[in-house]
Image 1 (cartoon, one colour):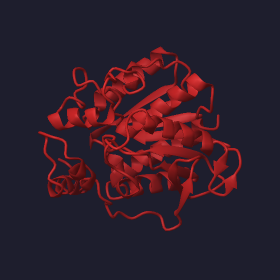
Image 2 (cartoon, rainbow, N blue to C red):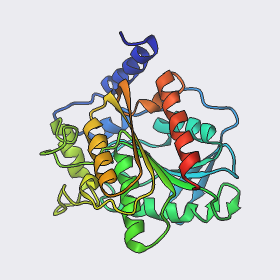
Image 3 (cartoon, rainbow, N blue to C red):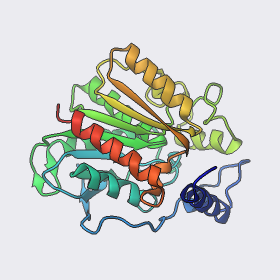
Image 4 (tube, rainbow, N blue to C red):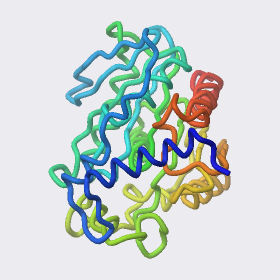
Length: 295
């Protein structure tokens, strides 16, 4: 039987979607954005939020310790929705448990902004964060990148760009419920509803294939990637993406850790600290990053 906290989190998510009038039959961008409000959950009192221009990319430092590790974070929302309000508790608790700072990237949303501009912004923010922290210019002692759902795809895309350019590569990465395959023919998540198919179409410009490895990193060459933690849940629609990506990263010689959480749904980590498993997942992610990002 599901815990009372899990039932509460699921009910909150369902109410938000119902209030926004989300339909599986078509994409309504305004409804998608309204379905991801601020959850109003508690965050640590000492967390600071500092708006910043990260090399031309709008961002916010979520800061627990300016001298600690730095994480560049890409939020989910199907490329068309989401932002700091919807992910505030996730990134605040991650920064707190890390004892460092999270650079939350406020990338341009589709359909107003198209692929690969979001990946370009993520890569720019990553390069900037390597040289600048919450206290000002200065090299990062430990640098990582993370993202959830669609943001996980952007995080991998930023690393693919970094590898191609020979620019800054993070020391570690965390992917939370990654949406890593945009092909509705092969992805149970991307092809689950007409709404999801239209969401991907809103992100990709005309003529771009859903199988492009930069858009669907499950199809990319993963050689030379840093250690990565992939979290998913048994009720996560993207579970297969995480499992397959882990296998392919390991086959490419990478250090990949797959963490599967019983009964957890898509991006349950947003519900910290209400849902104990959400907070525990962020503790796990922070411990992984502390161990790997500066190695």
